[in-house]
Image (cartoon, rainbow, N blue to C red; front, side, top):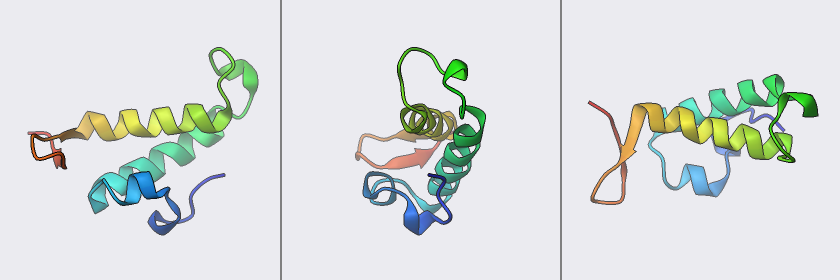
Length: 76
């Protein structure tokens, strides 16, 4: 289920990440959704959705980090 907009993202993403990080999440999730369509392309028994969420969080974490204030900030 690719996300058509940032508004469609799960609350656990919308309520935590800044706007740019949400865009990264959405794009990475949608790309992974297409990339890991076939079960043979995924590790173990993870669903397509689980893998896509992991890829999306990984993409966010490559550009953002959680600060001491418990908010996400761009990496420098």
